[in-house]
Image: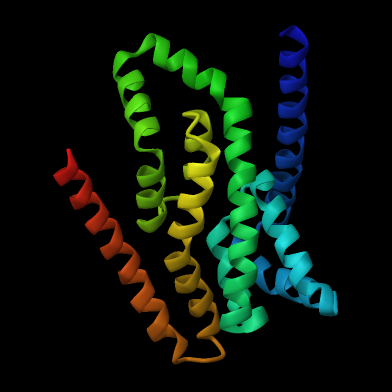
Length: 217
């Protein structure tokens, strides 16, 4: 057990080191995140036919520096067009989401157990969250809650990974299409219509699921 804790501490320190470097770089440059998007785009495109692979790898590494998933999703529409952008982003987001889930489960599981043992309300919420893991994650994805927060929370509460992965795969589709087509609209203005349609569709689906949950209770 002690060795396991030592490994956790070491990994957390490494993670904090990577995050610290990213924050220091951002602070040194004093530029808003949006200014980095053209740089990221040109860097990805510089890899030619390997650009999709580089994009997906960046998506997988993104959680380590807490780079917003939405920004990376949006530029895929500009980089690859709407169809390929959706495909590559779905691949990247699903891998990224499961990485965050594992981080939450590995690093946050003990914290969650400690909180539940001290606070009865937290224990009840955690229990209910586990019982309805699939629908809870699905709804959170459909209402566009912060991407990494959902994965971290699901991991900490030890929702079954299969339920989390399946709910994420289904739940991110409206959001991915929304933001990829939003990015694509800079070169194809009509894409904004599809973006708006899927944004609203995601919210309507989440509302329907919530009402269905209430009825079943």
